[in-house]
Length: 409
Image 1 (tube, rainbow, N blue to C red):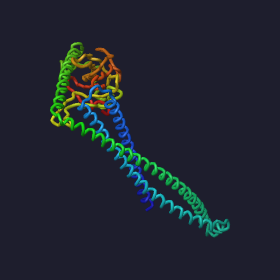
Image 2 (image 1 turned 90 degrees about the vertical axis):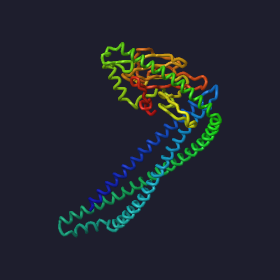
Image 3 (image 1 turned 180 degrees about the horizontal axis):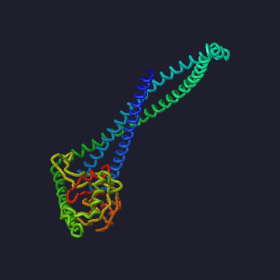
Image 4 (image 1 turned 120 degrees about the vertical axis):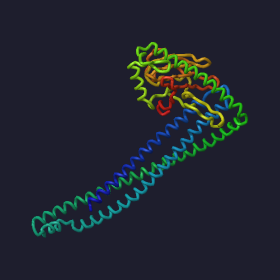
């Protein structure tokens, strides 16, 4: 029976320990997410709202506010989850405290009875008489063992009282800290909700302005899309030309390279395999930035009849920000795009990373570059006051979503 109870107690302890560690892990993950969102909001404010604009664009204002609203909504969701988790932990601790108090009271009661019993039989004479009244040596020996075990048990009970008391004090301290943390999260959430309310009011006013002349703004968006499409065509042509040029100079041209597929040397193949194995772990092309346009087709949130396409990702960054290579590679080409700024193409085996909207370039064709090496500086738009780099990733001539390759994009 004792063994069974011991096994049940051990299983219960292990399950409760796993639950505690799982909650600690969840709390750590949520806190990390909260910090990341706070950093994102800080970057949005710094990179999108603190810029000195020469002209006001309603479309740009709506898009920027929408990004801040989404970030604030994410922050509210995360802090709500944190508060709910803390509520569960507080309730668990309250139950533990109640259980510990009951255990402590029982131990103290047992200990008090032992002390009384020990006091009544503590005289040396009574102990000697207890031993001398033994029927034989074996019984006397067992009685000595009993007295030693009783003394040891009494000592253990006293130590148990001390441990339970310390544990109870620690739990009470932890409970107070959790309650303070929960109140801080609730206060932060309240502040964020108020900021979100004001943000949505401002957004509603801007959207109303958009709706007044929806056709004009839709026309502006489509016009910008046509410009972007034209630039994409130029970049695609440059990619094909760069591949063809690389293949014509390659000693591995016997593998059937063309203007759409690289003919790779063994070294280039190894580099491409390494690039593939680092999918999702590559660094950002700038040290500080926030994504303002994502890859693929997107419907405008306020003008549902308008659809746009982005061939890469656009990242708002700081003034004079350094553009850097996302991986080891070789510079394929450096070009000035007609009607736009400069771009750098870097080959990573069968992959190409393209860094567009550079004001200056610090590398040259054929140069080997390493991960995070500067390739140029990002140009600033004089009208909007924003500094935005566009990153594109290709496998041969096929466009890929950079968010699948860049760490936490």
